[in-house]
Amino acid sequence: MRSPDVVVIGGGIAGASVAYELAADRSVVLLETERTPGHHSTARSAATYIPGHGVEAVRALIAASDPRFAALPAELGTPPLLAPRPVLWVACDAEGERALAAVLAERAGEPDAPVPLDPADAQRRCPALAPGRVRAAGLTAGAADIDTDALLQGYLRGLRARGGQVRTGAAAAEISRDGARWRVGELSTGAVVDAAGAWADEVAARAGVPRIGLTPLRRTIAVARVPDPRRLRVPGDARPPMVIEAAERFYFKAESDDLLVSRADETPVPPGDARPDDADVALALERVEAVTALGLRSVRTSWAGLRSFVADRAPVVGAWPAHPGFFFVAGQGGSGIESAPALAVLAADVVRGAVPPPALAPERL
Ligand SMILES: Cc1cc2nc3c(=O)[nH]c(=O)nc-3n(C[C@H](O)[C@H](O)[C@H](O)COP(=O)(O)OP(=O)(O)OC[C@H]3O[C@@H](n4cnc5c(N)ncnc54)[C@H](O)[C@@H]3O)c2cc1C
Image (cartoon, rainbow, N blue to C red):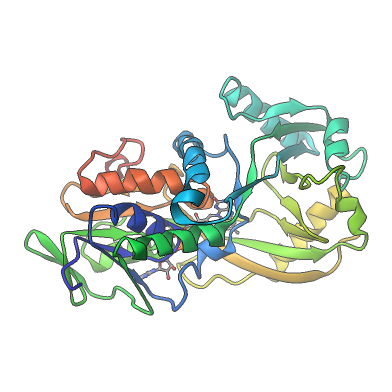
């Protein structure tokens, strides 16, 4: 396929999902630098679906993804993609209380908004929280864990089943305009989708297309050993809730007998293969220990990944008017998995000619 309708650059969740949606009625080639799709941000997330979280455009995409998450298992032949796990928002100091009050007030009345929760109730729902540490709390009951790998592999399988090609170890290096078409290496195409994650601006620059002003922010996650894992259990078979500090200075969730922890760091870095920082791991343990008293001291494993944002923290979908045919699908920040199903449908429509919503179009930047 040397002249596909569309070349998608990037084999993370963004590229795989939009390529799958486009392959319904377009010939598609997906190019991924790495040997394994999903190697970068997609494989390194906390894999959480949190309705009502993020800026308004992101909240709308997360809500619109819910019915797609329910439909995709039958469509792609995957296991169920969401496993319910509520989110507890906890405030343990004045700053946390202010942040929680602000979110509860701003979102009040929205269907997915967190609801206030009595701190004692929060501790009952999450015995890992040490008694008396939580001053105020909120609950997002409809949150869930996402089976990210099943989602990614399902999209890639579905793409191939629709006749699309996935080329790994295949970096898009030379990209240039060719009359009304584009050249990507030896491929000639009518449309390029730049779904290169943290590299989306580098790919645009290589194509002679203006940048969108993407900043990759590194975030570190560690999996800590828990001396007494019984503290992680909740009554019945339910998954223990995920706990997020209201001012987003740390979060944690149980992974069988261990605890996944993060200090929710946001360190600007150039695009690349992010590595965990020991100081971020230590601070995550310290902050989570302060509210749990679980005796967290040692770490089983840790990793880091990039969450890439533009200035207003909403994704970017569409082409600059002066550069038709070069479409960004980038800037999903910390919500690229939970919003992927709806974002992919929307982005595919934009590549087919629909006008992107002003809140997502590059012209807003
Ligand atoms: C620690 C952490 C926690 C997170 N938690 C959550 C969460 O709980 N829920 C959630 O929804 N999201 C979460 N996210 C965010 C989510 O992981 C990202 O938004 C999402 O993975 C972005 O997907 P992507 O496909 O755009 O990027 P990536 O997965 O990075 O994919 C981009 C791909 O493009 C490829 N590429 C780059 N340049 C080229 C080129 N020239 N040619 C070919 N290929 C190229 C790269 O190799 C890469 O594989 C988290 C992220 C991190 C780091």
